[in-house]
Each structure stands twice: as C-alpha cells, then as structure tokens.
Amino acid sequence: MISLLVILVLVLLAVALWQLTKIFDLTQVGVNSDDSQVASDNDNNIQGYLMFGFLAFIYVFTIYGLIKWGPLVLHTPASEHGSLVDSLMNISWVLIFIVQFITQGLLHYFSFKYKGDKDKKALYFADNNRLEALWSVIPAVVLAGLILYGLYAWNNIMFVDEDEDTIVVELYAQQFKWTARYAGPDNVLGKANVRLIEGINTLGVDMSDPYSQDDIVVSELHIPKGKKVHFKMRSQDVLHSAYMPHFRAQMNCVPGMVTEFAFTPVYTTAEYRELPYMVEKVSHINSIRSKKSVELVAKGETALDPYTFDYLLLCNKICGTSHYNMQMKIVVDTPEDYKKWLSEKTTLAQDIKAAVAPAPAEGAAGSSDTTKVDTTAKVEAPKVAMK
Image 1: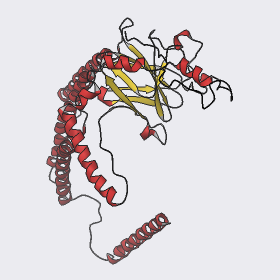
Image 2: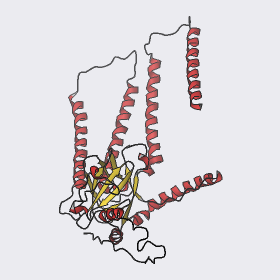
Image 3: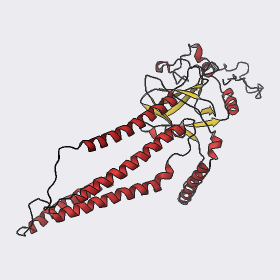
Image 4: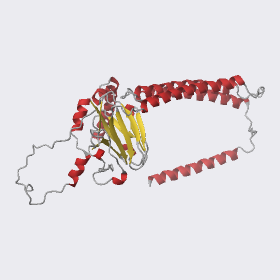
C-alpha cells in the first residue's frame, strides 16, 4: 500500500511540474527571445568550460576510486600461477590508465580550443597518412603484445601433463551447493551420469565402474600445499562457474560436459591467515562487526560472530535465487594433514552399502536395550595414499 501511495505521489508531482512548465511558457508570450536554435559564441564558451569541468570530474573520481576502493582488491595470490595472472592484470590496468589519461585530456582540450567561433572557419582535409599510421600501428603493437602475453599465461596455466603427478578432484555444481569427489588410490574418477542420481548417490556416480569403488564424496574441500590439484567440473542443472578468487582460478561448469582447471596451492590456510595484510584485513572487518553487534544487542538481537578467514569456492554465475549463498569452504592442509584427513573418509561405495543395509529386526539378537554394545569399537576406514 505504501509503495502504491509513493508511486501516486510521484505521478502527481510529475503532472504538477508539467503544468508549471506550460504556465511559464505562457508568461513568455510577447517577450523578445532568440529562437534561432543556433549556438552563440557565449553558448560555445559555456560548453567548452563544461567540457573542462567534466574532464576534472573524470580525473578526480578516478583518483578518489583508487584511494577509496584500491585496498579492496585481492592481494597475495595463494597459487603458483597467481602471480602470472596478477602481472597480466596489472600491466593491463597501467596501459588502460595511461591511454585514458592521454585520450580524455586531448579530447576535452581540443573540444575547448576549437569551440565554435563565428570569426573562425574550419579547416578541412581528407586524410593524413602519418596520423593514420600513428594511431593504427601503436594500438596494434600494444594489443599484440598483450594478446601474446595472455596466450603465454593461458598455456602455462591450463597445460597439465598426462604423466604429471596430480590429485584428481571433481567439483559438482547444483542449485545451490557444491560437492567434491576425490579419486581414490587409483587417482581415476569413476564414470558418472545425472540419470544415475538416486538416494545417497547424489552425483550420479556409476557404481558398476571399477574406478568408482574408491571414490570419496565430501562437502568440504581439502587440498594439500605444494601439490598440483586437477579439478574436473560438472553441473547438474544450469550454468555455474567455479570461482576460487585467492587461487586466481575460475572455470565455467556446463551441463552435459566436463571442464577442467589445475593449480598448485602455495599457502596453507593457517599460513595465509598469518600474512600481515590478512591480519590487518580481518582486524578491520571484526572492528566493523563489533560496532554492528553493539547496535544489534541494543535492539535485543544476536551479536555477530567474529570473522575468521577461509578460502572459499564461489559460484560466479547468476544461477538462481540463492546464487549468493552457493559456496564451499576450501582448506589447504600440509601434505601430512591432508593424508590424515583423507584416510578418515569412507568411500561412496561404503556409504551406499551402509545406507541400503537392512535394520536389525525387532527382538533379534543385539536389538535389546539390555544388550551390551562395545562403543569403543572403530570401523577401519580405508587408507588412501597420496601419490
């Protein structure tokens, strides 16, 4: 109802302004005015100075943006190839700012210098070969250099040798969550198809494939420092994008096909948390959350929890209403901690077997409440060795 009233008020205000404009036009009847629609020298001077004013606005806003939002950009990359991506990005930014500064300055300067003047006559010439060559060759050389450097970076990042010792992990995207599947000791993922999704087998893994028997499915991604991880990505429903910003990694997840990306982590989660810039950033965030918590508590609401940095896997495609919440925690462990974590996980085959196992019949041996059960017994989990 409030929205309707606001819209109604805005419509009535627009009608009132329109009527006032008509009244003003009527009051000007008989008044001498210049209706020639031809700009005078005074008009041209005003436009020239406005161009300079807009040029100053562009430069001031650019400088303000760098100071205000510059610290928000990603800092130290957490992967081996990250420095190469950052170098390419920084070179592009420097070139863009230089070109923007020069071209905008010349554009607005000449707009002022050669503004309209009734005593001046424009000089026309058909072409200038020197100028044509200058503004064609320079951009062509710069763009060729950027493209070649980009191809070099792309090939270095995307190339994975078949004989290279890697860890194979599948990232499975669906509205609105991520699931990871690790290849077992054979380091080969079993086949999968969305038509095979049933019950606990939410990834549609083909359990008749021998390579599927040692696959491990988890909801939190762990990877070891210093080891190349080969990600294979699938989507169950719509187009998603696996985005790991601190690792400078992003790849679309396309329904009906498998996309790939590989990188080597260089900082564990604990090490990245101790980087000076991250310590300062976390402290700043927590100071903001602390102030906000005071306001919430005063209203009788729950205070915000302190922020702790974690690597995240995000979706970088608008995939639906809960797209903003589609994320998964990434933990970079030491190789020893990673092997220990993985060894504690059960395989998908074991999970399916446990899910379909019949419950003991009522009254059968072992079902009575008085039956003693050894709660200290542990099921031996399969040991998964990292190459």
